[in-house]
Image 1 (tube, each protein chain N blue to C red):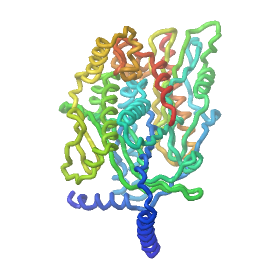
Image 2: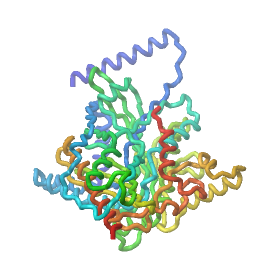
Image 3: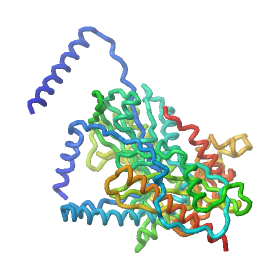
Image 4: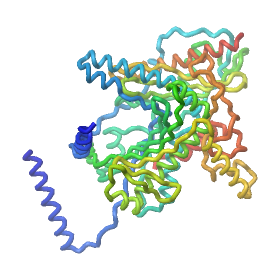
Length: 365
Length: 175
């Protein structure tokens, strides 16, 4: 306790000295330091959010027996969820969420023309102490760490794109790297599917699969579009001023434009777009946009249009597929449906070429 | 529920204002190919197939997944798959007989959720120019220690599971 009091006293003394010193030397105030942002993109495939039911049981029972029972409960829950999500993952096997998120955030931060421009680092692997030291990490104050996640709930009723935003201070002392968390925030855009009475998780998972990889990829595109807009909005002066005002328990509706309206809560920003589970509104909307772009662009080559529209690797359609664990798994209909945002005429953007094109633009800054 | 109204903000405040946490050491583990043989009894090929090539179309990730504080790296993943499939009876590309098989390695990673480790291997399989299909492993198991050996054993199980499904699917084409 004494140590804390001494530290506090030293800090107060230091702040006081700094103020006096600045006034005395009359140094012109420097502009605000550029925001430092780290984006951790390590999720390999669509995740399933399984609640930790076993943990609660373990706590209730207690001891090693409780831990074993809890682990067994969680193991069963995760194994069931993994089986149900396999076909959804198959349908999305050529959709590379991390590449698409990075592309969207890069483009939007550049277009926002923030002053000063933030310094953004995109990470494809977690960094521990040694990696931070090897990368010549420097102390950071107010470092914003963004961790995107795309997932479905274990009841298979809601698909979401979520970004966990953590503000922290990072200090380095010899061989030690320490981080002090200052704030937690989240940006969530989700798609709840209309419930069908009596429909269980297995049946609901099939409804997603029936929507198809193209539609699900288009939904993730919409989710990425929305959450990256939320992030950029919070970096603008208007967004920061709005965020600084008190948020009531009910939250408030915010957003820069009428088609970008979100709910600001004390935990971050959220928005939902309910779907009926049958109509393919996102892929059809994207196809219409691309058709309109083709109609107004004096270019005949569909391939030439691809960069203008958001290039997405065509997801694999597995709607006619048997279970992923069947001896013969899903046949890939490589020319079944137009890619989410690719030109309709493009022959299902050969997954290999598309992913190669995406990865070529994902170097770490 | 009412008590949560007070407990949660206090917990959040404590979390935010707590002492700095030390960033842990992360172990960069090179997966040893010699430890990727699970010893599982595998099905036998019922007719001849030639493995033309194994393409690597995994997403551009910086590693091959992780388990606890072990970040896994598998060098030459297509080579590992090629050697395992040759060992299971697929002929080399220049063999005189057999239908051509092209494998597209789409995913190979380790992840974990709650107390479960989830190694995943996904192949796109094309036989004799026919429409390709997917083979996906399913081999999640409890994560006991989160050790390097456990991670490598998990990888071995997932590879064996994917290969077993692949052989079974090829055998259906021999009829």
